[in-house]
Amino acid sequence: MDSPTDDVAQAIAGELQLMDPHVRASRELAGQLLDPQFVEVGGSGRRWTYETMLSELPDHPGSSPDGLRYEPSEISGVILAPGLVHLTFETVLGERRTRHSSIWRKGDGAAGWRMYYHQATRVPPGVE
Image 1 (cartoon, one colour):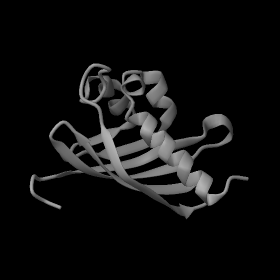
Image 2 (cartoon, helix red, strand yellow):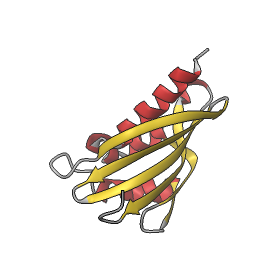
Image 3 (tube, rainbow, N blue to C red):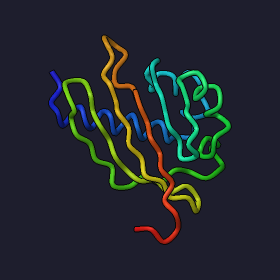
């Protein structure tokens, strides 16, 4: 059985994989990290589902190997319940700084940890 520290570490590893341009450009790889019931409320206010995210993610910023890359910081996590981890962190992509909150849920069998929910909030310039 995994320890709570292992669970948080596995969720963080999944989060970092989703920032990798190679993963973001691949519907198959990203699909392994997103829960089929995935929902996101993006920094723009747009609501994303599993299908819309997988179909549009390769065209999003941070998805090209020769383009801008996400620079994450301050990643931390807590166990909400067995098999449920809440992560918070910040990213910088070019000039855009964003705060994130995501919930990761452990799947059955080989499914492993998958992102169930994600919220992104853009941080205006000058805000600490």
